Image (cartoon, rainbow, N blue to C red):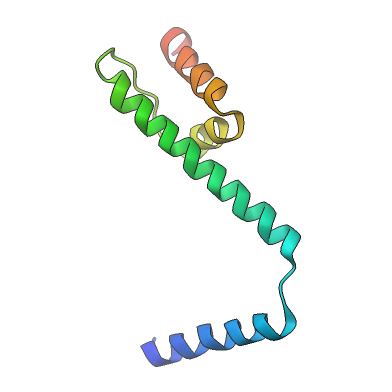
Length: 87
């Protein structure tokens, strides 16, 4: 696609959103969910960096990032226990 066409479409969408507004509740909910998943992935990354000295490795994928993001540090601990004792 032509870059001018893409920029025009994005600009038009921004103008439409400014005129009509956006439904804030669903966007806020989706945004918070995405932020929690990213934070969960960072938790797992730091666990893998620190845990590499102890032989701990939990794979980082959508499911594990969601679990650790929604549950926080107890979720990371649960994933670590599952990785060590069950798998």
